[in-house]
Image (cartoon, rainbow, N blue to C red; front, side, top):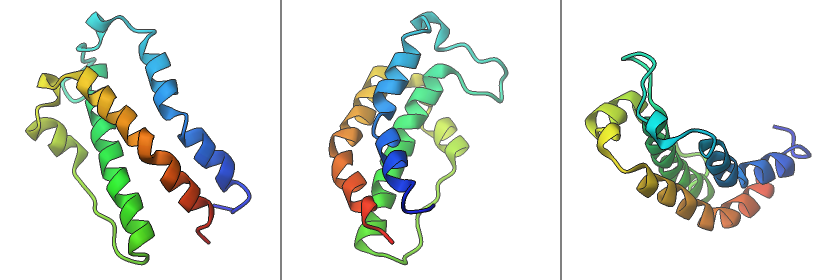
Length: 116
């Protein structure tokens, strides 16, 4: 990514929690568990996945800043959804976790402004 584009991308990323909660408000909670097909995720599962994805991204960002050049951890999203039973988890807890990750986000977003 060109360094002149980075601030706008980072600022946009910082708005993700608000964008997500605004989008979710458009769907009644009763719809959140609907799965269009057995191999597709429900809104509920996507919300829980977003929290896990952000948790993984948080660790990746910290590692990138603290240990430049080291490999980043991958994870099996589908395996996590199945083994952690996303459908049984509370989406409100997941949203709160997602919000909390964004509480610490400004520190990381500022740090990434200076990455070459």
